[in-house]
Image (cartoon, rainbow, N blue to C red):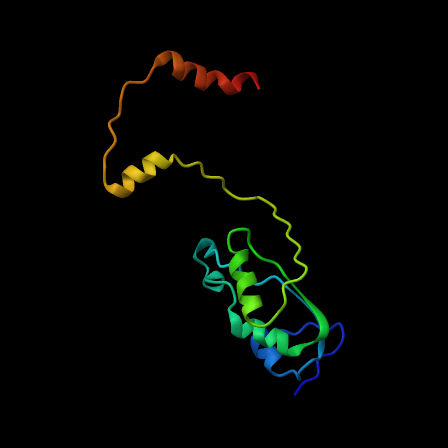
Length: 140
């Protein structure tokens, strides 16, 4: 067993490193695990860490210690469920939702048609309406 030292950074797979530590030896865990968004096809971001990871965190955490885990806005619920299922009590929970990314507006009726395999009829464009929409941003 390796007793973790104060203010030391350990290099390696965190799950494997923690397995070398004794029970109840860490006062706090601050982590920013993968968000499970499959960001740009990266293998390291294929999913949110599951129960085995959080169970190991709970094992090395001292009684009264705390866990601070960052999560993505679309997958934080998976993160919190895995942490709770591992035995942590979720209290209190701090949420800081910072919306950044590529906003993608979607016309739901077009998506329903596409899913049903229906092709939409393309009609004529009203020139008066099209002109207003094009020039709408010019005065802002």
